[in-house]
Image (cartoon, rainbow, N blue to C red):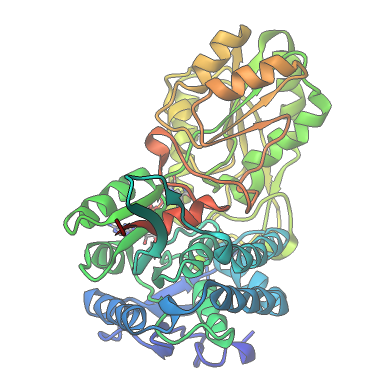
Amino acid sequence: MGSHLSTTVAEGLAFMNLIDGKPVDALSGARIDVACPSDGKVFASIPASGAADVDRAVKAARRAFDSGPWSRMPAVERGRCLTRLFQLVEKHGDELAALESRDTGKPVRQGRADVTATMRYYEFYGGAGDKIHGDTIPFLPGYTALTLREPHGVVAGIIPWNYPLQILARVAGAALAMGNTLVVKPAEDASLSAIRIAELALEAGIPEGVFNVITGYGRDAGAALSAHPGVDYVTFTGSPMTGTAIQQAAAVNNRGVTMELGGKSPQIVFADADIEAALPVLVNAIIQNGGQTCSAGSRILIEKPVYEQIATALAERFSKLTAGPHEADLDLGALINPKQKERVAGFVAAAEEAGIPVLARGQVAADAPAGGWYFAPALFGAVDPKAALAQEEVFGPVLSLFPFEGEEQAVALANDTEFGLVASVWTRDGARQHRVAKRVRAGQVFVNGYGAGGGIELPFGGFKKSGHGREKGFEALYDMSATKTIVFNHG
Ligand code: NAI
Ligand code: MG
């Protein structure tokens, strides 16, 4: 893996920050060990950046924004840079997928799917930035009023560890297309692909200082970045608690934010649904990426006449699921770190203690390295809607079933959490599809399908505790820019 990572990787895969187009270490020289979740072994290291490094990166992004050429370049030229980045991601796809899988423990098939989605983000935003335009507004006689979409300036992107390549791409694609410059702080558990993408961005012709990456812990680098007065806008994906901390930090400077804070997304299955078509989708929506997906379908609401049938079929499928090393490409990989494994195990233990019936457990492959952070999938039936398992984001391969009677109760249960990110409705009744899709409070609703994290073109974001602002599709371009109104008095 070493040779093609030449500028970021020295002896022992010592990765560097990328500030102003140059690989640099943290000013303190402090480093964070990078371990592979599949075996728990350290294979690389990243800088443990602090406030001084953040300041350096923000200043570089500020200079790049204020002096151009990026922010003043025609949108079509910026788009061409993003299109070249898309092509470079494609060219280095195998390397990026391998790096991502090793860093996060995800099966190689998932690493490749992440690369495909990442390509698509840069392709989409490479073509979309020059399609955004303002309005002319009928105003008073003697006036002409028009609007422009202008970049915020320096955008800070705080990225989680579950889909590092993809989430970086949805942030960077939209932010860069609109002419912003970037400081990205990837998660301490999954920073490697971000450094590599920032390098490829330089190769794609994105000027120095436009795309900066600094690695480090959330409480140090992340906190300093969200509070930095040189940052104009903050975008974050992660836990609600950290989202609150970041919003409070950004509020000190009264800066705008986009927050994607996860979910407890329901799939509602009515008795008239095509159950055979639904089953594999229901399983995949919670097993994909080991359940570490903001839009994981973690609650299944099942109409009573088909509850037993679906519960039995899901239990059969769950009992066959196997977790193992990323190279083995099984149903799921290891979880990201020991803390996450403990968190997931805690939910399962509490549910068992509360007497919620365990319908099935999957297994960990017999030959999986003992040092890896594996967790066998768990299926729970007839979950109390007030239980922690029903209300909180577990972020692991744990699925809960809830029986319901009729449409009213289905909608009430679907909306009975603080989250509102994604939902699905499975029914052959067309009128019901429309009714339920409209009544469920979620940023995305699928009918007879489910896209856990899918759909680059589809606006994505939360209601309620799942956050605010929208990413993906054209909507993200509005989030990543501000409207300026210009009024001409021409008499
Ligand atoms: P987290 O939300 O704390 O971490 C996400 C990112 O925020 C990382 O880059 C981290 O370094 C940064 N960060 C942490 N504290 C910060 C602070 N005070 N200021 C600025 N940045 C900060 O998530 P964590 O602790 O890794 O995972 C805990 C739970 O969060 C998971 O079990 C899951 O439920 C949820 N989560 C949800 C994600 C989603 O995609 N919606 C992604 C990651 C975690
Ligand atoms: Mg890692």
